[in-house]
Length: 485
Image 1 (tube, rainbow, N blue to C red):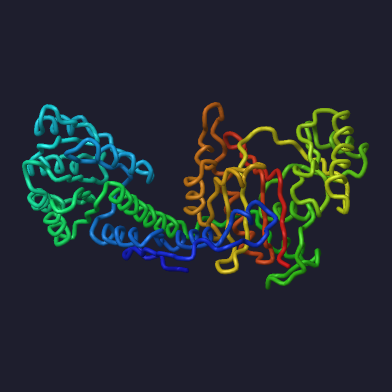
Image 2 (tube, helix red, strand yellow):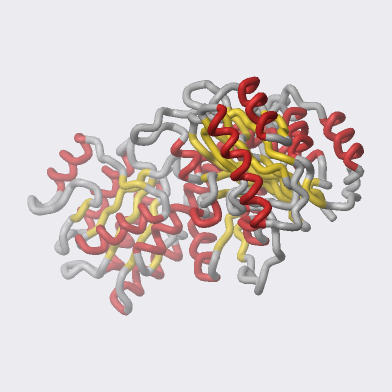
């Protein structure tokens, strides 16, 4: 899907969203990725806006066809009734937009032109007796405010003037504006004349503030999409990623006898060491790790790696190791390592008696940094998808994840961070210092390139990735990969 049209916005209404059942998958990434995630990622790549209902399709088409694009998400609301103004404010926030903060000069001019009891802070409430002239002057002032990117005008039928008369007065101001203006007409028979005037003048009008807010949000989405497409083109899809060795990855897969570039292979999970080699070949950092078959070996390796360490069961058949009791974190001394070695083996054997247990991995413990998940999964229709979001054992419960098609452009990687709490939190939250945002973006792009280069990889998941404070980089603490059958 390569539409990417900057001049003609495209809206898609995709039906059949709720398929009955989903194939079983092993990773969190596979469980969270579905047909809808793939379509959303493909639409976003192509700059297509997705509507959920037929009503949205037609509402948004009018706004996109008739309005200029806004420079940002800050909206002014102009109304003659307080209740609809508050409704509009709630609706705007629910769509990711903001009430604009008006300049002091704008508020002063509004006070001079409106009733003394009118509300001149945004939303601007002119009160029920507002005249057509006051609507016109207030709209002109709001459009002139540099902090206002778009305006919603709400017109319940005024008691002293007709809605049609207000529409006739407003249309010339809206025509001359370089910022989008949408109208919320509230009522039935008393607003029909205004409906006809606005439609004839190609001014988008809606029955309720919620629909008008959704239309403004789509205008912002389209503006951001156009900017992102231009940015990605200017970057030529980003500077080449260094420290990538696809030939080494190909040799690894051949050595495993598991697959080739054409997608042929016998399937199954790759050994932990091989997964780490795959990541290293694409410049993704992993903690130091070694395989121990006895408690004494585990202690020796812990001394070599450096305390603290974590122990993880080495058993390809045990996918979710924490659920099988197959992991022990933050071990500070040799006695702790010895005890943990025996506990991990006993728990794994009890949880999976038939599993082939190779020993226990001793891994460097990364104690600081924010936990995120970065994964990739092959979609039958669109190819590899990359996932980013909140990591850890509760990733499927939190569902704070977003998807993009691989390979991931710099703008798309930025979008994954912007649309998830995990990404926004990298900038710092409460007592957590800002993390290395650039390193998180780098991991996303590298994993996406790896997934795009090697279709035999059915699923590849890094969970958690610890993003260190400052410019400390990022480590893939947990990783697993499965090949197509």
